[in-house]
Length: 283
Image (cartoon, rainbow, N blue to C red; front, side, top):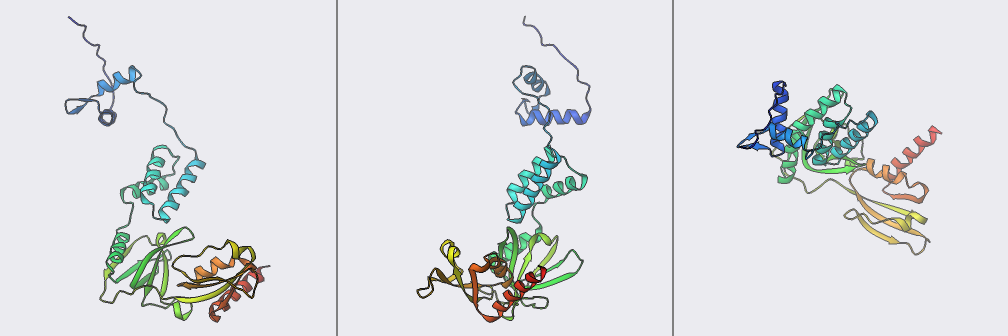
């Protein structure tokens, strides 16, 4: 007769037993339809399974990955952000608040109201958005056009709203709003009976680009209406562009410095002059 296998007794808690059974199930070690802990132990003893200390990441690595997770959320990469959150839970050096935040994110990665907004956008359905900001102020917007836009690596709800109070843009664009999505923790949405607009309000601006910037500039598809070299002014390119928000436009062109000059319209040119004057007073 063949030798019977040796038996051992494991003194472990019910929780640890359940964890071992879960691990055996994950690795496909079964006795009939039940996970087999004995087979799991045998595979470890025969070195078919490698057991190693759990890798723990330091605080600096954890913080770097958390910044990466936040950046992925900002640009709508939820699946990738979830993967990082799971790794942080397993290996990160976590404070209790961060651990709680990651667990909430894994359970509910996308807010319900975000899904509702995206559904309204796909259907072309005007809607009312109500939310409370960090200062506990309530905001109401009746939105008749919206799209998710990315500005400076963050997601915004770019929308046309009936409301204009509090909008600091020029009169031609004061119905356009850019609402930073990660600043809205929770919101309510309801459909409204208004027509869906074809897009945001827009104006044309004309600007000249000089020297190296003129040569390096790449046409912005769907925004630049004209892009041409000027014959009478050497190394100068004339651009006519459609814009929907002077704030984002001015932030873009200010970094071009003296290699860019906005010619029209006058009210946009005046806003740029005011920004430059504010900067000058700092120095």
